[in-house]
Image (cartoon, rainbow, N blue to C red; front, side):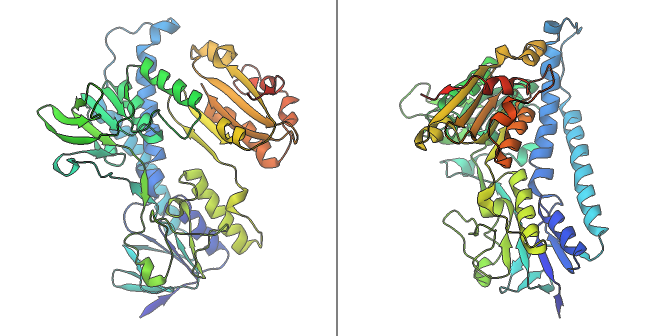
Length: 459
């Protein structure tokens, strides 16, 4: 017998539970399906656990540098990695239990555990159960990419998910992938005490960023003793008596780096290969992402795709915004679109990189008359007080419309300070709305009005 619902949500990642609860509150009999861990990537193997580990790594860094602040610590700083992991696990458990309890305690929501597969555009099978609904929302997230690297099948390796299970400090961690995930783990484990080498195929780290940003981030990481090897286009791996040997070049010496453990951090792929999408007629692109329109509807009427699975964001905050767009359009008779949101994200190294809108290279290519404000973190009082003056702040403005085009803040508390810029950009207000504002002293944010009061043409 087929069980009938008004809506089916497949997956309990960032947007799934909120959508299910909102639908249920609007009177929709809603089923939500989870095959593994409640909360999805962010809660279990992404944002929450990694930032918890980063907090422990920063505590170790602060302890080692305590003398700089006039604080004496007798004896060596020791990392209790099982305790670090236990703390992380506790934080994760609070979140997963909270999500599951919220769903199970919500009237009109039926929680079903198991692997969901489409049998048609309106029928989803979960084990022995068949579910049907006129509205189906796919929220199955993604998983770490395992690249086609020679020799990989013959060795043990870690991914960002597998890193959540280790309770030791690798003697020498080789990180393949010099972008956001890889760099966060690289700094984290360097601060825990590992020797760390980052291997990147591109000519610079985080290649989607401007060169100045990439170079500054590299300098920060290298100042902590992290090795960086770029242009690693001739890449393969093999077992070694000390762990793993990674060939990084066919020409430049040294051609091989030997480490104890290998972390693959080269991106993520969507969880779409085992959903039976072909049975429903749902289209995917060449990379496996579900194709959606500007309001997150698929090519099949009554089926939407949200979050990492649709390739339209790949961040927790964009995933949650997907929920907001779908809920507003479906339940509030609004007309919200993915294309209305501004690209915003952060790299949570220490100090963090926070980004909003265009990069400098994108602004140059736009054909606009662009003004830019620049300030080194050495000129920010909060940074000097904390003794953490690495980085800079850049904000770009359209000279004709006075709208903020983009910003790159690399420095202490940049991930918080960026939000005053994001809010003005979202409001469509001119940059003068910040320039004339009075910010609290002493903070990082207080320098943004000053920065915008000293603009010059982008050259």
